[in-house]
Length: 444
Image 1: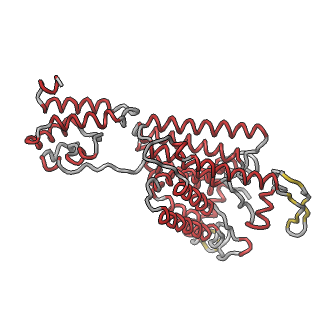
Image 2: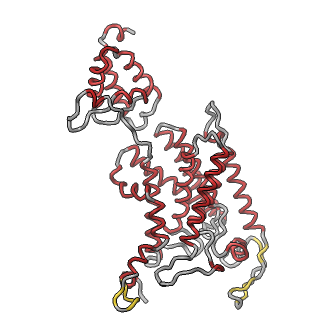
Image 3: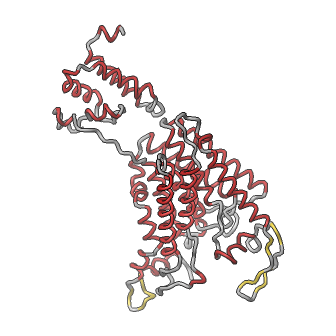
């Protein structure tokens, strides 16, 4: 009160504004309520209504060229001056200052998923070390689908943060999932030709019902339904875990069903190509020949389809999205993400030591936990690099790929680039540019 009564209003307002901006440059202190509510309100009180234009000018000059961390009402009254020094007139300063709502690190992470997919799809046959692991173990390609499912879960938490009409939101989620599923069948069901075939068409007995996009659509649907119907958000904040404890119940239920099928089903002997007899007659086998997931694939879905726990990866990403949606300070977000990631990683490694294999074809529990933890650590690192420290220029290509992820996925999965390049040849179809590129790396 002494300062307020003794000092002129305008210099004090500028001083408090400068102090506010100086404190807000601390990355972990930017969103504190004291900074974003107390200081702007005091500044508003100190500004005389009759000197609005002049005061707006003074505050804009004090603000410099950076982002103004004010409340929304104050941001509408002015914006920072241009770096060139032009347009310092009042009417330029009175234009609203718009802030982008997109999270750069989320786009960068999604772009990283697309980049990994392209690298392992076209480089896996050349460098087997980055291709899929034959059975147990982890290679670079084994991280692609869990990363996609993880980022889908984060996006669900942001899209369905506030849905007043649950029925309408459910129909939207079902429609989106159906579109993704049908698009996946079209792209990965076998309709489009690949590198070694110029023919079109698909054998209905060999159609791939559950490719990566189809599994993403199922994970998206499970995550969206959990977010719409199983969230217990109240007016009084009770904590992230308590508000979404039913999501964890759903995840444990899926894991329980998976373990019951994997270790409880009896696998009889079976034939391979109607000639080779495979001796099984066991329960709980996790080898490549006699596991129950393979039996379900053979009789119901087809080869390499059974992966219930893929939906759990999406639910884990959903919890990371809740942290992003409900916590505003960087420090709180990173602390929660690190706790989740370390816990999942330790638990996954512990299960692997107990004999639960790290296996992508089975989408084992240990594999799900370790890849989810890796996705969480990677996303946290990108968030720290891009959204906190501001090194956005390092990830601009990834951001662009993330914003156009589905379009790039369509181009890559449909082999459109291969079709265009392979369609031009010299004298013989075998003398095309694509075969020349492959022959440089692959030995006959």
